[in-house]
Amino acid sequence: MRARPEPAVRCPCCSGGTWGACCGRYVDHWATQPAPDAESLMRSRYSAFVHQRADYLLATWAAAQRPGALDLEADAKWLGLDVRSHRLSGENQAEVEFVARWRVAGRAVRLHERSRFERRADAQGVPRWWYVDGDQF
Image (cartoon, rainbow, N blue to C red; front, side, top):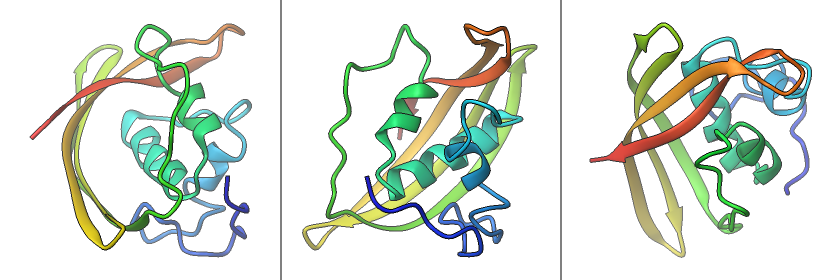
């Protein structure tokens, strides 16, 4: 895990906001401040990849699909996120289509995915959005 960024630095999710006012409030305080919608969760998960926060990625993954561990690429240089669309697909389901770009060992990588999310209560009864899975293009 990389050092936590200062609240005033620009958020890596490309929203234009600061870390403290954008994704940082969810990533750094996920137990007490859940993301309010699927797009915010997706953006915060991108930011968690940037900052090597496997704890947050695993904590926000739907239990039935959650891997046992994540092997994050420590030398990845994250280049940007483009949210193409987001929509509710049911009362407690949503989809977010995005393109994420990064470099690893000098090689450019591009992930275009339509991610699925669901909203349900956690173990304490707090309603939360969870990443379920996605289709890559």
